[in-house]
Image (cartoon, rainbow, N blue to C red):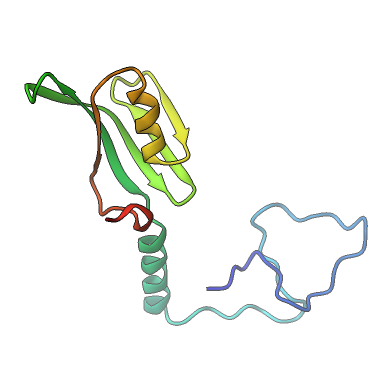
Length: 128
């Protein structure tokens, strides 16, 4: 799906000093309106596929207590292609990491027995 905020190839470059439109302003070739992509139903299906492709994968970091005596969730997270967001369950901290695995490694340095549990399907890069 073409990005309406990017000028198509062959669009003339504005002369120096031309004001830059606000971010998100669609760029239209002069005199040619951008036609809609498909029917409303087709466009909706395109958006659904886009969401499915780029949706984050949810995960939790859990701590084990004793020899399978008890356990708890210490943090919840969402993994994106470019990194992971993490929120500690006690609401004291949030963080951004390069991956869910890197968050687990950092928190495990304290000597706690932690596990990474994927709630959604594993991201393609970490699938077995």
